[in-house]
Image 1: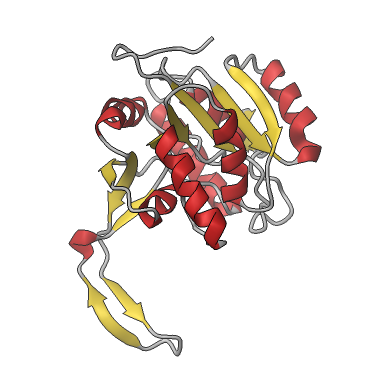
Image 2 (image 1 turned 90 degrees about the vertical axis):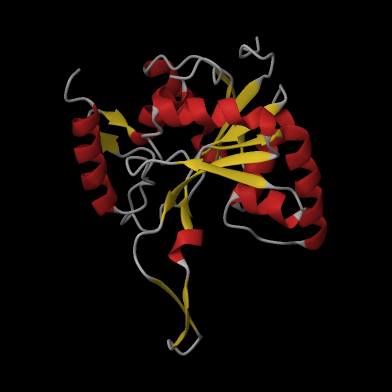
Length: 236
């Protein structure tokens, strides 16, 4: 059964978890141990902390469906509506989740980001009804330069206008489906879901992300994740 927030809007969390883990030296990053549990389980536990994200669709490779089903049962992760097969690219996997999602909004979150905070989730879902899409971002503090193909600086960019983007990214489902039609017809490839809305002419709002909300892509990231976990659970 769908869970509604106080304004009557309904949300479904879509978790793409079919990555190749190429930079993890042969280890599946989603199955890597993080303080006694697999990364994907830590991610799912974090997502479920907002009561509006009780519906979850997990998108993975065909060969991993049974494995993830067993893991979610073992760790008693409720709210899993379906575990489905993804596509060739991340955007194809997300699309498979969107077309199966009930409700009016989808929150798309990387399976390898185990630390979305409760406050960040609340802000994103609270803001969603007022925008086409809402995404978390971190302002860039370093100087940023644009370089050419030969490695020479072309210009120094205004870092006040540049953000590092995270997930969850929350969208009106109907608009995201329309935007997907645009990129599928044009065979465009994008690096995040907000780009799909942008290419279709919709407006995306940035809210405050958190430095804790890292994406695990390398073995070093796991070391960082262990430190973050310890920090977040110091008083528990």
